[in-house]
Image (cartoon, rainbow, N blue to C red):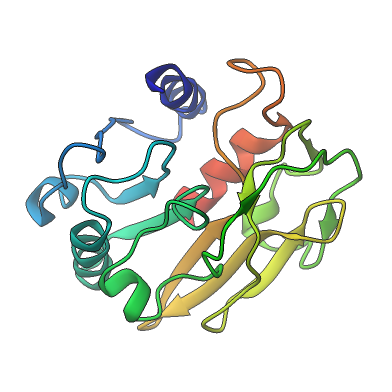
Length: 194
């Protein structure tokens, strides 16, 4: 849904932290390494699935290895996962076992409250908290949990570089009432700058 992703783009632009926030629809095509390398970071989100999840995973791993930063969020770490070398090479920090969308109303559990990933992040709730059913893998450390205790932010390193996976769907309640409310924009911004 282009409206969903436009909501994320608008909110990230409004932070003033990024010189450009562009969209690439990977449902029909896979970005090339050169296309990705025009940017310092890629936020990977899926809703309708990827045209070629294997090719996408291969190019994302190449991009990350070459110095780019990658943040994976729902459903790219859940039911419509990035595959290829991203998967087989151990880049996923949340096991992409499937999806759930429970009602999350409790206070966040900040496991590492001093993490730069949690600056300005104190609240996140959702009537439908779309996320992966999987736990942390590949050495990922849970930085914060949803109120229910399920992982929300998982950080790790790969090849000595920071890596982060967000266990929530980035579009907000601005675009659909059951999506997240709270500090999701700060969480996205922090992850993209991590």
